[in-house]
Length: 135
Image 1: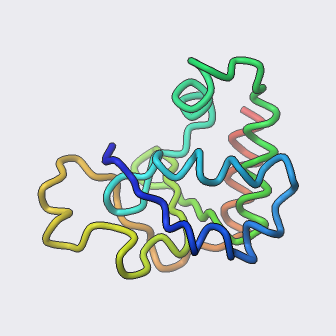
Image 2: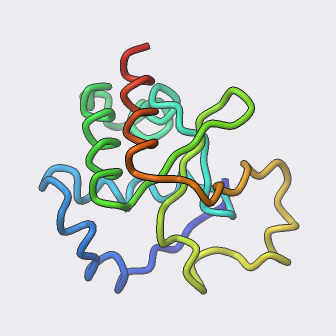
């Protein structure tokens, strides 16, 4: 996973982040580093909990993770899809110029997750999250 520099102006002035529940707003910046150089990451809530909260925020529950996922999708920040038996997610808007390494830079990274398909939608993403939550 590459290091990330967060676009402060984009973060501070985001209407999408403004629409998140108050307790979820700081989590967006906390989750951005999950994404690889192409803005994509595997969406496995248990693995996310372990990576993001398992070491220093163990009181955060899986229920919080699922609620946050739903809020991020509803706000239009996160899209997900299924491919080759896995679920992947993409930070919508992360592909703006300057936020991710360019295509020639991305070639340096090995084993990047797949790029998102063009047909990602909030509705499909919420269905995926509901299914993950139920399993």
